[in-house]
Image (cartoon, rainbow, N blue to C red; front, side):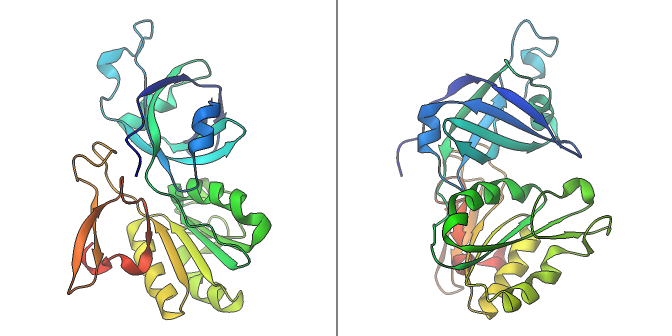
Length: 262
């Protein structure tokens, strides 16, 4: 892995409002754009300004790990859900405000060609798979399953599942996974979302001999591999070790993750 990228301050180019507390912050940086690959993330936070009503005392000190949602010709998008103090500060940003960021960080999804591919996302696991889809869609047959709690958590895909049944099929998105794998003759699965979803997806994919790469979600205090707070068990029950989601991940071969220890 290369050395940790430097801290930068970049003005927000534009802001896009979505439903249910979701929004996209866009920046423009040709150099960073060339460095990004699907699956990578940035550590970002709102930059405090003494001219703002919400001054430096109200800006969270920790960065938030946010996956790259889109990257094209220098334009990079961060797809965010307003759920806490860190994302609330980001939610108040507008075009022209400054964003502090470190990245791109972590590894990326292995890129395949000539395969029957399934994308599986849950909630805020959607953004990294959107970026991946744009990169591989011209060389693979792709089907996308996405699930959320309600219709506010749903975005463009091929098959929708919601817990409350407000749109699409009612239930957990993994309920439709096995049928899709069989009927679509899926060869490669990419997934990102809540841990229970990833664990169940791994079991189903393994049972059907499907190659499976998953982007893990974890709490990251530093995001650069120093604190080891995001470590996950990798290996077998007889021989395993901890790897850091922020440094060796966030993308892992799902068969290498010791799911029983999570």
